[in-house]
Length: 129
Image 1 (cartoon, helix red, strand yellow):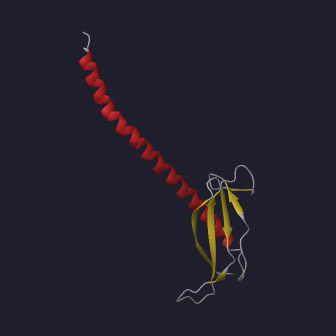
Image 2: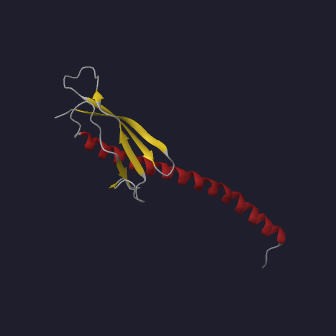
Image 3: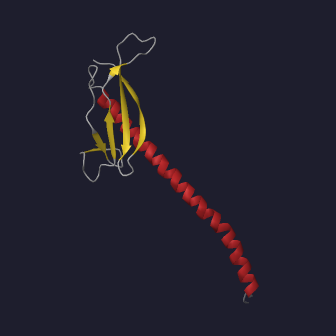
């Protein structure tokens, strides 16, 4: 038993009415996934930077310019794999209330190299050894 032209048009209309919003949701989902991946990589980079922060000994010290891959792993600066670059300002004495140990504060900046925008920035606090 064959379908008439009206039935075919009705079925196509119903299917397109359901599929078009799903395509729109797919784009939103992909953007959310990309954002989650970037946040995860930034957290990995920040953990590495905090580890490097232990090398800060006195005011004026700064961490070397460090580059990272898309997975958050360190790489040489200037290579094709370098997607993120992390720079730091010279360390300063941190003023933290209620703390007895001298602490250094070091501002860091995580830059996404292809876009040139700063993805994250903040301060790490380190107690010199």
